[in-house]
Length: 61
Image (cartoon, rainbow, N blue to C red; front, side):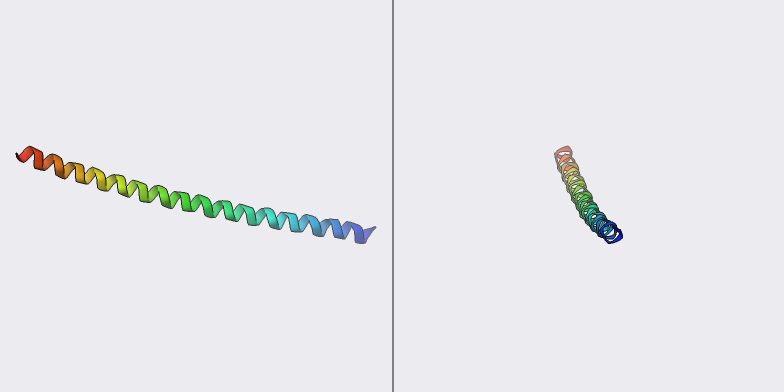
């Protein structure tokens, strides 16, 4: 009976380790999304800067 309980405990430990691995993957995906968001923010800032340059050129005409 104790061996069976030990086996069940080992299975539970393996499942918990798998869940931890999935959590780590999700954390990595979230970090990647955050990085993509930061890139998009930078691109939007660059577009805003180019718009400002065009506005300045148009104002000078």
